Length: 210
Image 1 (cartoon, one colour):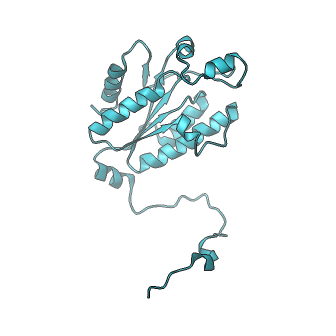
Image 2: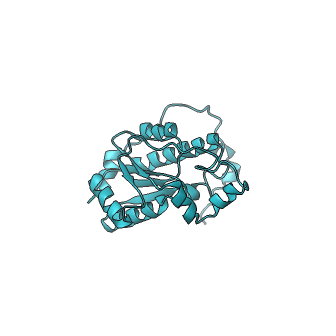
Image 3: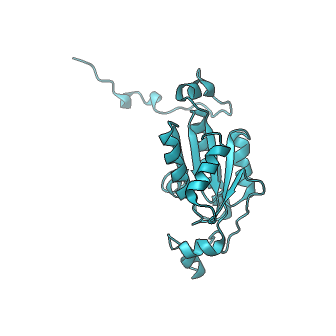
């Protein structure tokens, strides 16, 4: 009869009392090994813009196009991140900065696995977006500014957040009572005047993914 191992009898396997270390553990496989297996480079495409600007819509369209071409992709959507990893964060400037940092850390790990990571979150502050760029690497980070004017975002208001902010039912709403700092040198800028499909095609050309 096969003997079953009882983990509860080996608490030393479940609890590590060793002090934490700032030294990164290394893997026998490099990013290049993983990229070679997938057939493409890992990248991070970072969509930023106001709530309702169209970041998620464009991210989803981009992912579908890349998937159809055989790219290994994953979307890190700001709303979805707040359902899990970022669920303990609010919308204060400090919490928004921490949300951006956590997302950037996850994106870097997934990129290191050889994935094309598509991050779509408001990320309103330049400092945190530049932190993400520095963490991920200038040659691997591609910033897309979805430049939709506030008036249009308020007209869309698919989540009802602008109405609540105007009625003072919620605070720290980006564009209303919390600032949004537009990128100064995004690799791509798009907006409501550019058809979605055209914007995605242009983005793929810029990324050399076409």
